[in-house]
Length: 318
Image (cartoon, rainbow, N blue to C red; front, side, top):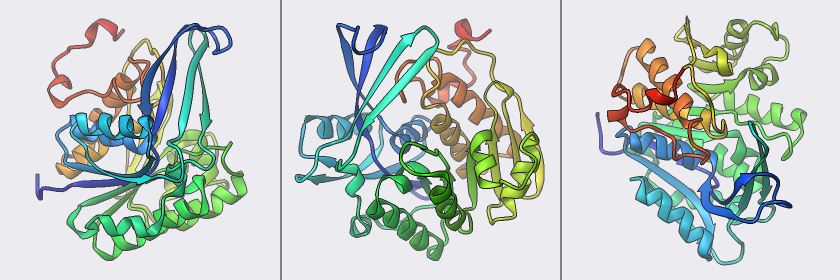
């Protein structure tokens, strides 16, 4: 792999309280303390696949902030955590009110992560990386967080980095109309885009909503050369440098699908920086996305490279 530094990502990672057992928090007697967040999840996925990756974000001067930074570092991620003493680390609650259903509630208004600032980018040498990976979650958190992402993209493009964008749309954080306008701005600079089929419809409202390949082609006309549309149990479609590809999904019995898209992006980017052919990029991406669903945590199910072909988890694959 060329260069010591490969991928830079930035955003909010939070403390996570994961309900222990089936039921809502009004019923449960116990919960597990954990961490999660889109960009951090992807960073862990990349590190487990042997890709040097840096995560930049803000955490509070509190126990959850130290836990976030500690979890990421323990997984081999290079962590640049700006400690913000004026705001708490965000928190998410994850519960299973009934078998097969996951509910996530966020407590992030005014969080340290939402106070990410363009000045924080001065802590990292952006030109030393090959890829910048950002998501729509951070764009939606606050005006300062959005400015930070857009500034990072501008700096990355000027330095010749590939810009990777995972939509990760959060309807609770902002309206479709506001989001679509910002996404359009970022698409013009993105080289790689990851979107679910629903998110692809938001990015390309004039395309046939029932044609994933057509959605990918419509998104590509906005700028990115590589567009990947995930389809859940139907796998994914991709338009890569003008060529259409399709990959089936792994046949699994899912435990929790939260974090699957983050792991999918990690798998694809890991093979992209290794300059693997498109079929291998998609094979690894779909496998990583599937295996993330085999653990109730946000990132713990992400595979290590040695596991990808070892058959370690065949017992849970149909």
